[in-house]
Structures are given as structure tokens and as C-alpha cells.
Amino acid sequence: MGKAVLAAVLPLAMAGHANAAMFQITMQTSGTGYFQMDGMFDEAGPASGGQVPYTMRMIATLTDPVADHSGPTSKWWSDSDASVRVDLEVGGVVYTTIQQDRYVRLSHAAGRSGAPYEVLEMYAELLPHSVGNSASLSHTIHLAPGLLPFSDIIEPMAFATPDVLQTRIDGGVYIIYEDVFVQVGTLGAYGQQTSVSVTAVPEPGTYAMTLLGCAVLAGAGALRARRAG
Image 1 (cartoon, rainbow, N blue to C red):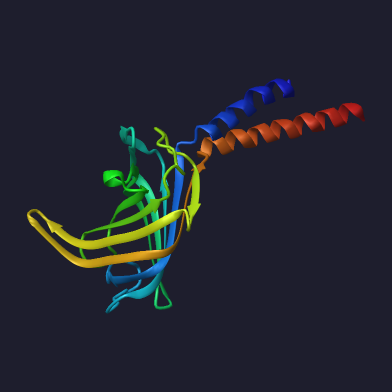
Image 2: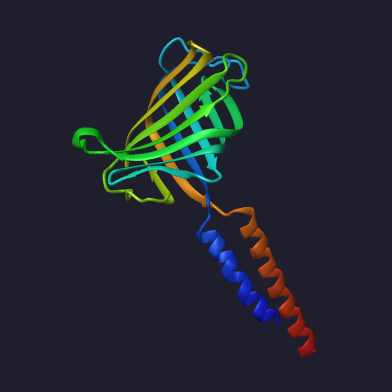
């Protein structure tokens, strides 16, 4: 009986892992940039007067990404219910924002006009903490060509400098109301060191099935032990 149930449970758990619809995207970059984003983060600032060193880590969890576009050399996916965390260190101070149910887009495209690189970008629409009513942040990297296939599905990946040829981060905080559009904060930075990873995240049901399979296996082992005794 235990073997029969286990044989039914474990393939389902493995299938759930293989077809995970959730993905975590992590992009981290260090370099120099200009930051005038007071009101964006939980902490006051940053407000740099010029180019300053920084490190930014942007993590987005896509719960159910949708393929919005699929061409031979351009793909993009989006999720309107993504969770986003941004940690920005400038001048020894770490600025953080953690948000839920945000719009995030991941895109992969060939370089324009035959440029010798491919472009991977994560774009997020956010809410500022205290100033304005809208914000955006994009993390754009240039990859050496051929490292990432133009797949119709999101593929797990991990790249870092020197495979990451160039990085650009752009952001803004805005006041948007009817016909009024005012930018009240800006961010522009280049990166010298960058890493990016995309990993599949098993859905909660997959964990439940795996735990059930382990429980069945443990029960079967205990039953065999009692019978042997």
C-alpha cells in the first residue's frame, strides 16, 4: 500500500517542481551613479550631489509570468502581482523598499542594428514611500551574445562580469494626476561589477506533495521495521 501511494505521490511532486510557474530574478550591481530619490525608500534619501559609488540589489519574484511577446530574437514576460525588494547602498547607508503586487517585466532581445551583445532587462513599476504617487526602476545589462537562448519560456540562468559587458540602472519618482506628469526624483547609474540570476521557485503545492511523499516513505519504513521485529 505504502509503495503504491508513494509511486503516485513522488512523480506529482517532481512534475510540480519541473513546471514551477514562480521565478525569482536577482540583479546586483556595483559602480558609480547619480541618485536624487528622496521619498522613494523607507529611509530618507539618497540625495547625492554628483557621481558616487553604490551597490544595488534588486530581487523580484514573479508568481505567474505571462509571455507578452515572442519573436525570433526578442522575448518578454510580465507579472502584475510580483513582489519586489530593492536594497541600495550609497555613502555607507542602505536604502530599502519591499513591495507586493507590483508590475514587473523581464525582457531579452538582440542588440539593435546588429550590435555585438544581447540585452536583458528587468523593469519594475513601484510606489514611492513618501513623495509622489508613482515610481519606476529598470536594470539593463548587456550580455555577450549566445550565452542565453531565445526561449519561449523563462530559463534559469546565472551570469556575472565579464559575461555581463555593461550595466545601466535608471529610475524615477513621479507625480501623476490626470494630465499632470511631474518627475520629482531621478536615478542614473552605470555598473562595473554585475551579477544576475533567474531561479525557478517551486509552488507551495509542490512542497506539500513532497512532504506527503516523505511521510509515506517514512511510514512504509516504520511498517517494515515492525514486521521484521
